[in-house]
Length: 247
Length: 157
Image (cartoon, rainbow over all chains, first blue to last red; front, side, top):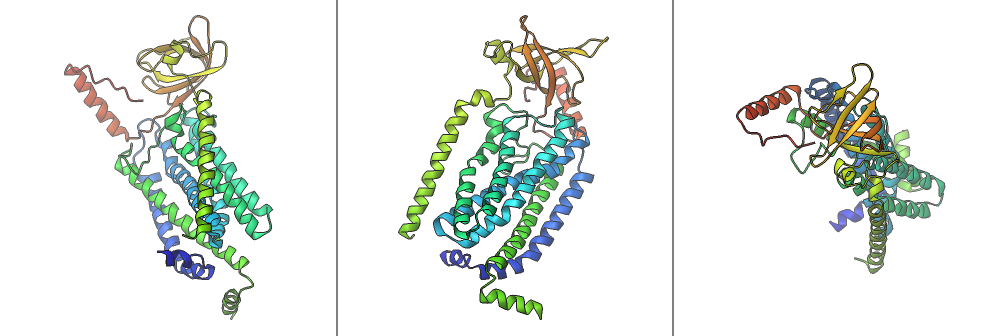
């Protein structure tokens, strides 16, 4: 266990593992996401109240789910940065933050598009929507802070502290619909209890969520590899790799 | 674990616990402001301020919707099954507005105990189902009502 953990600290070792893992993540994710979206958007039954407009759930829920999940992963990596000073953890935080920001924006945007016909408004300052907007700003803050400090080590520590401070927002997002009166309804897609929707709607939703996880994994690997190559450009293994590619 | 790492871990955990407590106390102190709307029981108990724009939320009572045939004026009762508030509204209602559905109305309390709304939003619940299932459920509950079981009133919203 500890040996694996220490190996994970080696950028070279990770680079090799990521190269082997990426095709699986990409094709597995693309397949699941495609199946989930086609099934959900074209074949799943429509809702008795909302008709077809509910189908935005197949994009809204996976992106909102991932937006929070990515932040939790970043917070775990930030803890590793602060305690074990592992470089790779910082590489992950920097690589994942823009992806998380895009997913959060997508969740807010699809929610607004759905809210107009369903609720009657694009936006309302209720606890769920506001805490999700704060998550978007946290992602922006992480990206900006990471880019503003040029020294690698101080940048890693500053970003890790910001990410960890922001993690208190995650339970607020998740439980906002239960703790307070909100316009946003409680969660439909639940992993621990019986879902509030029939199987022929829930299964495509599950496929989309899993597919998006794998696609995120692929994208994170790709961005981490790029970041590793830039940071390790003076080491011998990167020079050898580049030469081998060039021949 | 290395003692220096253990120390760092302790510091980080204390930092997290401190922030969690601070945020927890803040949201607890602001809980009334974070709540999007007052429910009818709170309004009946006089907790909602007069002459301030507030939101009232709850379920549209069955059989309480009165539409003025001459204009867009509509009147309905919003209930949480303990108390209900009469809401007046002039304008176009959202598609999902129906008796037995959740709504959030924005406006102010008038002196006569009525709530004059200038915006009505529909509140959707977390349940999704195909139209055929909804019809089947309705038929089943109608059959139950005919059989003389009056205690099966649907209170979920």
